[in-house]
Image (cartoon, rainbow, N blue to C red):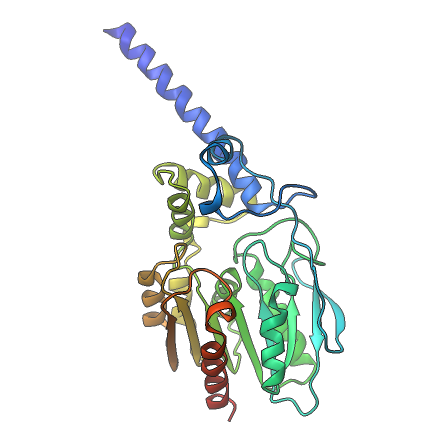
Length: 313
């Protein structure tokens, strides 16, 4: 029996070591973009063999590159934050204020041009931002909104120093998370914020990605969180936007697609409940974790225009 227990112990130790090695490399690839790699593929689009390969070896995500540019006249800015970040500034004559626009995970500012265009039509100047590791910004690292919060603060302070009085923040997914954390960490006070589909906790969003791929979350999701946080210098289990929301005192428009498989309605409801200022929640029944202009353009424009009009006094 002792021999059997000993062999069992060695087997369990071997499995434990292998699992840690796998999650270590997965965590690194999840938070670091490569100079080359296959185009980004949504987890639900992967074949069984592709899922198996990614499960064991991870996937190289190429650094997001800006693929288009604004049609309006714009200025390229480089701001020094925790890294140097690149922004596009679009100024509107006699603007009602400036909206700072933040993209999601593995995205870049060119993906946000369509949103910027709508804000410009409403009479607002915009500042489109590449987070660290994306587009024209420095590095290849992403921390899913954690360190990016400092870059939100940097952009807000830049506009404040330029004399802008009406500063609004807009973020989708990771961008929305970074906004919530920036308000919690740095006490910045925007005129109002618009948040699209922020996750409730880091652990929940990691589990959601495992679920989309049909992979068990326990214990791999927790191990991925541990190694990812360790590699990037923070405790990932404390990265919880639903907690950050308790520090938000300004008016907030929260937008969510009811078919979202990466962020649950429960997470959205918790964030909404915790917001301390005036707030509105708009949901789109047939939208997932996507650009809402694709399926709900008119509704999105009307929701945003009404919200901004009510908070521009």
